[in-house]
Length: 192
Image (cartoon, rainbow, N blue to C red; front, side, top):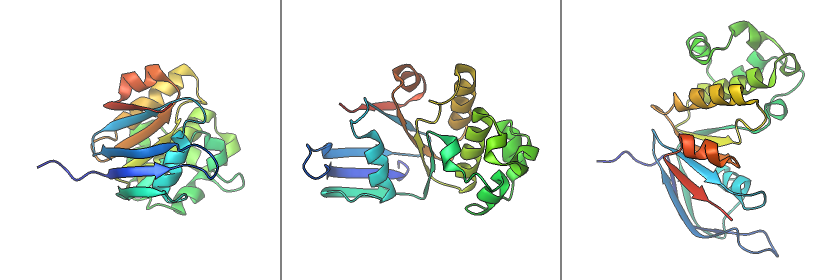
């Protein structure tokens, strides 16, 4: 028996008022252990899909069933409050039991968690963002351009880190980067 999907979208139809439909009878299933990438140009509805999954937008038709989820955002600087430490912001949303082990696996010096966001590099902050998302113990991880603001070497490290989580999550990722999508994805969904 196949594992229950962590994301099951059936017959999704959505468009912004007065504009053409972004989705018409769109369906997608995602299970733990899979990474599915949504690929497409700006304005094709990639971020809108995440807003629909998160429940911030309502579809015209169709259903979205999802397991507990967390998100990794494109810009790690805007996903953290500037005046609180990384540790405070993680404690606000997640159980920090086992944080040292996860930090070790992710190559994060636990001392960095005592710092404020502006004191970390983009790569360190994106790792902290992934750490926070994983400590929320999701079954579904929504990753919105998780490497686009990083240099190539850090991009590779961050993607390897995400791929190591697949034994307990399914990942739905947005990217413009076709090479990245082809390298890491089980399936690619192209939007136009």
